[in-house]
Length: 123
Image 1 (tube, rainbow, N blue to C red):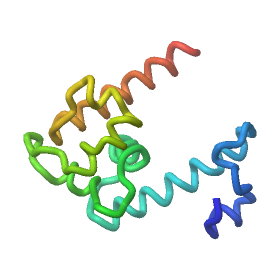
Image 2 (cartoon, rainbow, N blue to C red):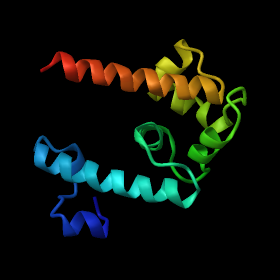
Image 3 (tube, helix red, strand yellow):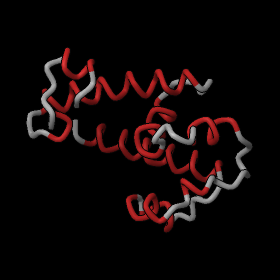
């Protein structure tokens, strides 16, 4: 990570993908802060769901987070979220027929619920 925050935190250039978990933790904290600021800047509430969306699907260039979190649930997703690149990286979007804002929100909630269950099962 070449950002000022990354350098200040002692994050190496490949820290976010390093096997060193301390480097990974530094990276995710920095990304999460940056994502929270970006969400706030476009008027999207910052919570676990919006942060998950921002991290996985919003490059920031087309404000897809703002679109998803301000439009009615029946609104068709923008082309950037229906692209071959996104669907290839996230094949479950295709298999679960995630085509609308509501579908996307439901998908994110499901993913977070699964993560919570795995965490609780690991204890």
